[in-house]
Length: 264
Ligand code: PEP
Image (cartoon, rainbow, N blue to C red; front, side, top):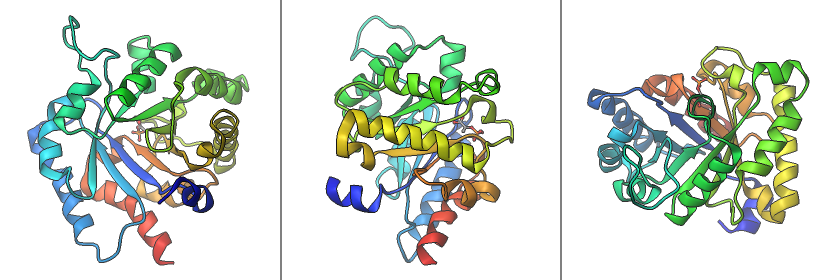
């Protein structure tokens, strides 16, 4: 599909699972179950599918399922290619391990590790250097939402966290309200629509036609029960899923929304 085609039809949705700091080797069975279920589908499911396990499982998961319908991503990377950074992983290492993408700027890293927009931008640029897709996360805290600062905060994060050289192929945006992550709370569909529309406008302003072809995921307590409503919102091109990606059955229930929509 060319960029022009994508701009005309909208980007192919992505359902990406973020396992966070969960998953021992035994959990690989869940990724395998997702892969097998997708392979058994007679028709394409209508969405790209990805799982981002902890770094310890990236290589083995990529070897297990990465050549099929489930792409494998990582959850963070360093900005450098190699060097004296004990405990860190470069995007080149992750690509070498079989990752196709890396999440950068997840709110848990922004909060736990003090990651700034500038660092997130540098990590995204490093991911591009290594040939990885960068899944760049943005989202407001509950305090910012209550102070009516959501659009302002997210616009600032979009401006500051995206490097130059962004394309629909190398970058995916994930809007994840911090207060919706792991809480069972979700914004109203109208509020999701407002934020995604603003993000789309900013992408179009900065990247021209490419902005329309860029995927903007929604993340925050997505489950099978609410996925259809959230995924139907304008400018929502898929989901970044935490808790509900850990079990194949739950994750497949979210992916099913796209298969059902395609069949309808
Ligand atoms: C996430 O951490 O990216 C996330 C969306 O988590 P959850 O689905 O559990 O809210």
